[in-house]
Length: 421
Ligand SMILES: *Cc1c(COP(=O)(O)O)cnc(C)c1O
Image 1 (cartoon, rainbow, N blue to C red):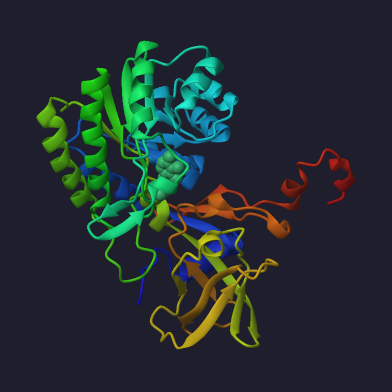
Image 2: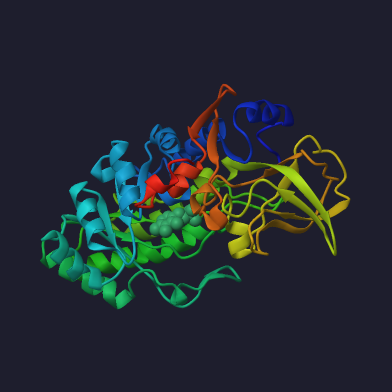
């Protein structure tokens, strides 16, 4: 059971002289190569565009790298929209896919000329009242309900998800939007998360393409784009075949030709809002083993905790761990690898077989490039780590400094009480 790291023990030792652990490290070369592959896989579609889901890795340096590959951004909140604005993304490069949206976020999205993707039928009215009009370009999020299956395996349960409109609602929405002046329409759906399957996108595409033909026929709406959103996954477990994006692109192309081209809709653009697939494998959390504890189980305590990476605590998610420099040693010790929060779920691994860990060893926690740092929080007064970029030339750039106690106390009105900190 092995998984390759993009950083060596020697590099970590060197980096940690300047930037103490824990830190998130991103692999610039990996991010760039992967973005090229994505664009290549969908090059058959003239309007193809990836709107990177900012929430996965909200770092301006990362967004600027992706910008080199024609990526836009998918925002879901005010601050994400502000980041898009600060980085000079144009309106057509910003997708605003939010839900339970506060009015000021619609206002701001409209001011940026972002493409608004409506999560709910009642948002038609809400949006119109809030911004005083219906935008010319508008998208609606679809939820087909029921179970979403790929081959024999049930992948997810859209019927239980809070997102999107029913089929009846999306037809009604398109009619109303058109009557109120909308001219360019989009359809969006996100039905299953982290699918490690080359079938997900094309299965979803078939549902949305069929819907697009029906919507055009019944409402006369001019459908300009279909947004397949996020959900292409990565193998967190070792020795699992990753998705092949070129196969995924090809599978979508086949359905596109069968359904859209065949129905005279061969000019519809395909949009994506991938997060995990774009960044997940190209980030890791580096932490140092600082304590060992021998009670009813064997524990390794490290200087990172769930505030730096919440997925294991929150969903019991597996993240592979490599003990730097011990890549070739036998995994003959069973450990719980823990952080320091006063929460028993603050464990990066439970009963994990690893090589013998000595105090001071560096642990590389894999696949934290998406939904890693970004899910961080400050429980127990713990501070968020720095984010570092391992550049293509192997130099390291700090792309976000670590939080300090001053940051933690900055939201009190009476900061002067803490002026001695
Ligand atoms: C989270 C999210 C994404 C990205 O999902 P991944 O699983 O990271 O690909 C894309 N679009 C929307 C609307 C999301 O909420």
